[in-house]
Structure formats: structure tokens, C-alpha cells
Image 1: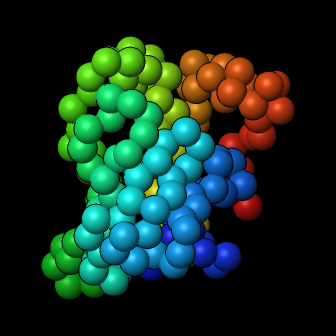
Image 2: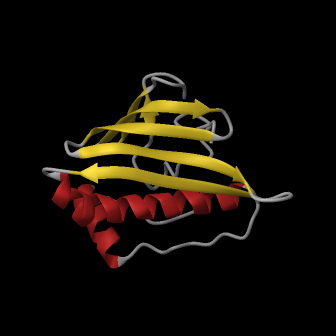
Length: 148
């Protein structure tokens, strides 16, 4: 998690999705985002938690976070949580466009972590709808889902 938005990012599936970028290394106050989604780092506890507060698109009011949770001996859970109230244009853009893409991106990130840790990978193939949205957003140049 601590490598997010760095040149050695081991979590974000940069080869398939717009990269996460910040104006400085991952730390409280770092500002940036990915694609049209903008946010700043509101909380950061190295190796345990990073919480982002949305600043765009308009109508995204809330936070999203990544947490590493201990689950007994030799087990951890990487959890992604969104706590957001949508209003205005986000009432449509979130459920119709952004949520399906977001969910696919998070699943790809979790699969990438499994691959990088040498675990059995659990690939959630992109739905036809997600593939169509990616094709439209990329002007017909979207890449394929790949974890090699």
C-alpha cells in the first residue's frame, strides 16, 4: 500500500487503468487522483491505512480508504471502503458510469496484489458493460485485462 502512486507502485493496476498520481509522495495532504476522480490524502498510517477525501467530480462528497487489517496469525485483509453521498450530477454519473469502472479497477488491484504476493489469483473478468465503457472512454484504444 505504501508504494501507491510511486514509480514502484505494487498495488495500482497502472497498465490497465489511469495511473494514480499525487503532487508529492504518499503523505497527508498529497493531492491528486486518477482519471477524472480527484482527492487528497486525509489520513495515512504507513502500512495500515490511507484515506482519501474526494474533491471531484462534482457531487462526490465523502471518502474512500484502503486498510490492511490483521486477521489472526499470518493472515491479513486488504479492504477498500467508500463512504460517499452523491448529489447533483453524481446522482447519475456514479451509478451509471463511475461505479462499474471503479469496482472493476478495485477488483483488478486486489488481483494484482495476489499475483505480486505469489498467491492464487482470483480474476473477476470485466463485464461487457465495463468493456464498453472503457472502449468509449479511451476512444476505442482500451487495453485488455492482464496480470502478467
